[in-house]
Image 1 (tube, rainbow, N blue to C red):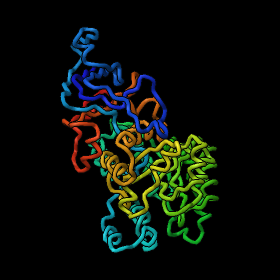
Image 2: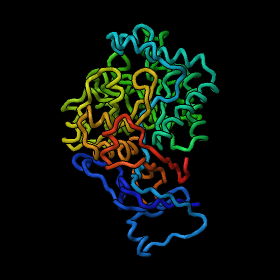
Image 3: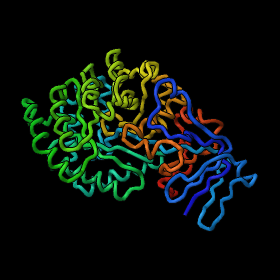
Image 4: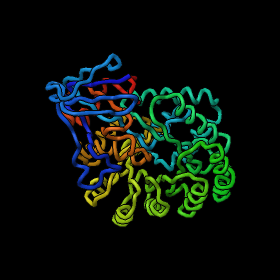
Length: 417
């Protein structure tokens, strides 16, 4: 079975030679082909080119197994890759929303028993089946909004049983949902109440009990730590990452959201695939990132919702760094998985160009998930995860029309969803 999409106004993020990531000034350029076709066979991109090739008979696609879609006036993009989410959670935290509006900080809300610990309590009381059902609703939501690959973290368990419950749910999502899923163990998301005065003992628990069991069941691709003021120190983080590496878990990191925590330097030291948040990033952090293969991943939805300083995306790109954008979809600080909105925030708040945000939510965010060899651009042989827009005047209209749903047709692994 195949799909032939014809009369595409512009086929976006095309590559004749596939890249793993896009850095610095190159982020301001996006490959595109006007008046194009796209051929999908067996779940992968088989061919693409100019409609003139079809009109002149240079390319002939015949056969009863090929379904044709006319995309006149519309654009085709590679699906969004959302490389940082906490989409598996129970309940919601809208009651803390008023506290935020009243001026309480993220740390103050956490200190009153809210925040991550609140989500951990709700998750503990929620059955695995119900947790799966709630999470699949959100997965279906982000698929409809154009996301074709997602990284999902644990971290609302904070004990072995509940962390395993979360990771099993992520595993079920991998099995039954059509998008690509990567799983991250984030036992070091916060310190549970019972360990408040003995954080190091909780770190020992993560290292000696949680990581070996998670690895033995092959439940996670990556390991993450919230390395920041009020959460886990650089020393804690190093111990946890080293233990994860011994069990084959690749590091990713929450870093520098609340302060200059040393998290960026620690992530680079341990060859983290990505360091995420980065609201507090200075010249030293940029220099360290420039000498690494670690992807700086910015979460503008979280900064907006919490009223945090915007990360210095413009300074990073001007220094030659790649930048990825992700949603941070979670119940407390970014209750949205709308990657098109993240594109808009990248432009409006972070002063990124439309071309830069396209690269940041496709090829670079795929890299931040270890997927850019197979996802994140239109290239022959890559997985056929794409979406067709509604009629639009230009590709810049995507981030410009920040409140409009412009996704018309979603295709994942070659199937219309």
